[in-house]
Length: 157
Image 1: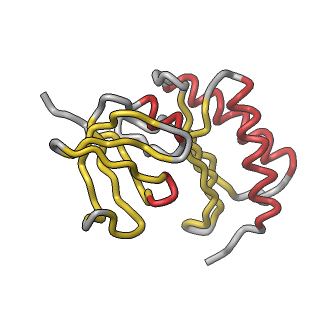
Image 2: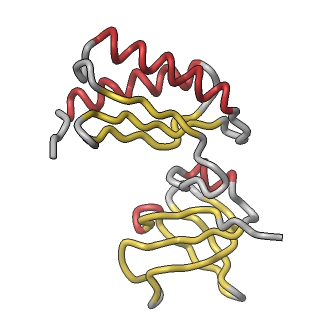
């Protein structure tokens, strides 16, 4: 398995962050990895309020591809993927949790908290370093540093 140099990773990510932010979008997630004999640059993007289109993803894809190709960062054999995070987008930053306020989320913790390492809960509020969630009749303050993965739970009607 090939690994990418941290310096190069940050240079590419910073440029992609700039491309996305210039258009009023957020870079929700970003990864570069080696797969099937080539580098894959995967970015999840969305507007802060959601609603990114396939055409917008395609446009950003072309910009990222042109940048990486022009700079020859990954050689000639690489693939760029730009996608919407979808309804079950990962919640990573406080702003992501704010967007999901009042919604049910699935939360996997890095270590046990109040005897649990997984919670399905309603987001009540978001503060600087914690999210307040309601599990039945109890409200818990979960530090962001304790959250491994959090996603909005998709409700089927």
